[in-house]
Amino acid sequence: MITTPFTARATAAEVLTGTDLSGRTVLITGGSSGLGRETAHALADAGADVTIAVRKPVASPTQVGRTARIRQVELDLADLKSVRRLVEHWNRPLDALVANAGIMAIPTRRVTPEGWELQLATNYLGHFALARGLHSHLAHAAAVRGEARLVVVSSGAHRNAPIDREDLQFEYRAYDRWAAYGQSKTADVLLAVGAGQRWAADGIVANALNPGFINTGLQRHVDDDTMRALGAMDEEGNLIEPDYYKTPAQGASTSALLAGSPLVAGVTGRYFEDNQEAAVVADGGHGVAPHALDEATAEWLWLYASRDLD
Image (cartoon, rainbow, N blue to C red):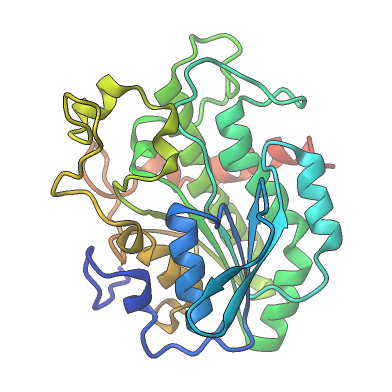
């Protein structure tokens, strides 16, 4: 088990204290707000050349610290044409790709033009296509520096939703917003497992993580009753933060750790939470479910998704 000296309350900046990422290039999806923004700030302040991929770029780049600026590119993960455009225009080595963007709890089943359920398409397929498309740039960076990194933001919700090989897109079973979200997050862990299997020889490591509970824009589709049940909203509709919630800076710490810290060099195919490798758990609790680390399922999902990209 991989352990670090950082607690669950460490911030993204704290886990990179003393780390010099000068000359490193990082791409972060969903980097304009929430966890992505905090991850981008921490990596840029450590010296990395950071690009954020966002659906709606703003007029000017984000100012970070005193000197570092974050570039931005347009990306809609639910649109494979948008993913291809980003890949086609990327023209430099890539030291780390942080698959951070996502959607959660869409109330009704929606599908993309390719027929993918929207949560699975956005959270998994778009990132799969992006990572596969940028593989040569990751491999180039690894050849120069000895390693490149793929970091995939998952969720503890994966524990309740294994991959349904018979009905991955909810075409036959009743659609459930949380089952669909959980399955997409299982797929995210399996993306790291699959990349870890396939790309190790190229010097590319891949790991997934659970950032914990944080109030961000991810909750925009969650109804008020559910937010109250989570203890995250009062009776008047005001957001509150229970003791177990983290700040965005704390929630981004594990992403920053996996993207930039030398403490996890060479580690691949694992699942982290609270800045530590998580234990495998069969039933509930903190940790990673066995179904999310299953290599046979990772291979099946990789081949299934590849059909829409080849």
